[in-house]
Image 1 (spheres, rainbow, N blue to C red):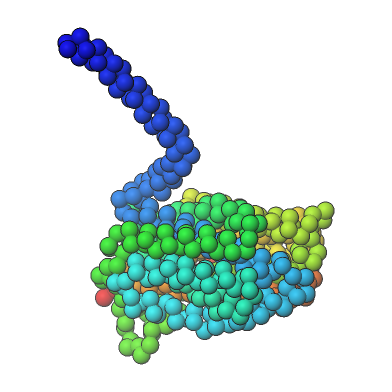
Image 2 (image 1 turned 180 degrees about the horizontal axis):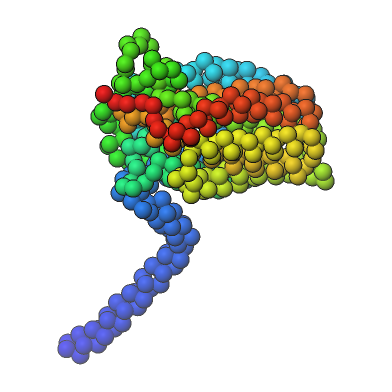
Length: 468
């Protein structure tokens, strides 16, 4: 008996030892397979949560904005393939014009309502962001059927996606000041959020193109999954996002009698008034650049499809322009954080002059290289000018009304982009003429704002507003 028991003990021990080695091997294989996902995920989390961004909640907003950008680009790939690439150029212009008329025209009416409406939801910002995500998830499913059948529901669904996307953008701009880490400037915070979105867009775009190759519905299925994840991620933001303690409604104006204090004069209806000349002039300059961005997006899309860059196909030409714009925007966002201590007014005046000179040069010596340079410069200056506008709002607008000012300014800039896109779609496909028109609009924006911005810079950028 004892012999048998003694014999079993080593055998059992050997079996346990063997099982342990097997389990260890399986764990090693599991870690090896898991690392390609977990490794980059940990790296992304470390980057987004650095310098106090994790503790303040800004890191979660950066990740949420990345999810937003990835989902939007999936829908963009699907709609572009359906509305633009699937038919001849002449028919595509008509279809895109119809798309703009049915979606963008109502949006120009709805956009001014977004800011004031969200002002009434200071305690529901997380819910508003989650709602914008969930709405786009459901609309992506609607679009997945419409892109195959070609039914008219494509247009109202696309309008819903557009409005939801812009509503998210407005709320996100209003949320950032609530999540600033200690000793973190608003410019630096917005730079991080924007870079997170650009990085996610750059990763998701080729994935969306690959899904499109499988079938027109697949990028929209991908968007559905991404936006559902964004819906849940919205509620992981800190509760202070929903706090409206000490806030008021911002009125952006350039006249003395309407200056905020909180309201020196009674007003019947809040509007874009009363935060000082520097902010309103900076907003005008940014609107000119947003107009240019919308114009180039649509004008070059049709121009390069009909007349590709020398030696390249239409698809490659559009890819070159898109990459140039993306790289320029990323560089501008990165440089903006380094220039945050400089006078924002001088930066805006300078970048407008740079893009004006580039547009004039590209119009006179129209060619492949200069078109790519113009799109890169536009992306670069657009990012710098927007970061400078953010800095001016941070500097000149009282904290009690700052989130409201962000919401209203973002709505105005989105409307400028829509208007630029509408002009781009109706322009004749003549490169020199189109870029000359673009240069003229930028010149008008620069001339009407340069005096006020330089005057503000000369006076040391002292805010003209006060809080009682």
